Amino acid sequence: MSVFPKNFLWGAAASAFQIEGDISNDFTDWGKSGHFKNNGKNPLYTNGSDHWKQWQSDFELLKDQPINSYRLSIEWSRLEPKPGRFNLDALRQYEQMIDCLLKMNIKPMLTLLHFSHQNWFHKKSPWHTPESVGRYNSFLSLWVKKLIYTLH
Image 1 (cartoon, one colour):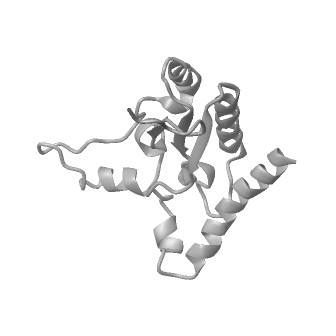
Image 2 (cartoon, one colour):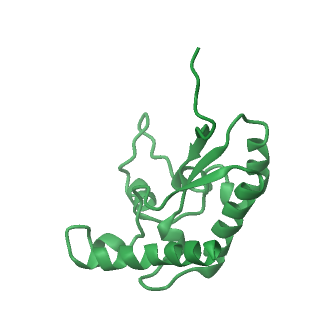
């Protein structure tokens, strides 16, 4: 018989790109250009499972699961669709999602970069250039400020 510590995290996970829908990023562009092939068909990532609009009812399903943590990814391309322009409505929605999980006693585990990037990122600041660090730090500062504000 296996015994786990009291604070052991049992969880579920999801990728924003795969479930949220209505995302425009480098993966969706890649798919539109024919790089994703499935039996000769190119899948287009449109609304995923429409989680961005239906997250509340999706989270209700978590109540029936024997979990105490949930890993969700934050879609950077949704938060910064244009260089230096942040979508505050999207930020507020992610905050609401996190708050909802906390109220359900489910610990949110955030993935801040889950492989997809804005359509403009690789053109303006690919990872092999110093500019990429500044852009990523700007994105991270949103979350650091939010966490500091929340903890105080």
